[in-house]
Length: 180
View (cartoon, rainbow, N blue to C red):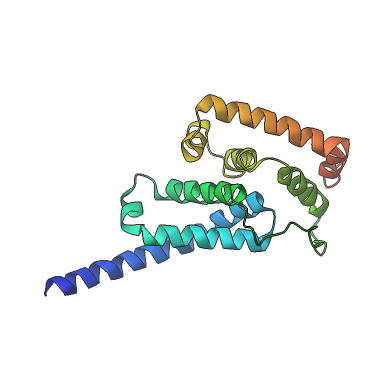
């Protein structure tokens, strides 16, 4: 087999490895992206952009110590970067009202998403990574290029803002489904 045949075999194996990784990790990335973005379509775009970047760098990503952490970091940094960037063609408008969910905790989810949406992108990313993905401070600091102390401080301040924003009504919403 010539060099061209070996290269094609390696590329096919890389493509198969990436596809397996993407299939296995897309649900986790979607959950994090949805909480970061607050809307389904933006989350889908963020995950798609993340996977496109990972695919283009897959041989290097695959050799990384933790490809899953690499994917989370890429997703989070893309989210923060898109919030920094403002396209001159985009104009802010009132959000389109969503159809209400039918789940028992729909009010709770909507209140929490609204509170997260009022945080800065980096604070929102810290809370999502720490509490949704259950990552430790060191992992979050590495993903966001912050010190451990900065992650702790941002976490504390963001939680205070979320608690203030949610107020007493949040406690009533979160206890409605609880058994007496």
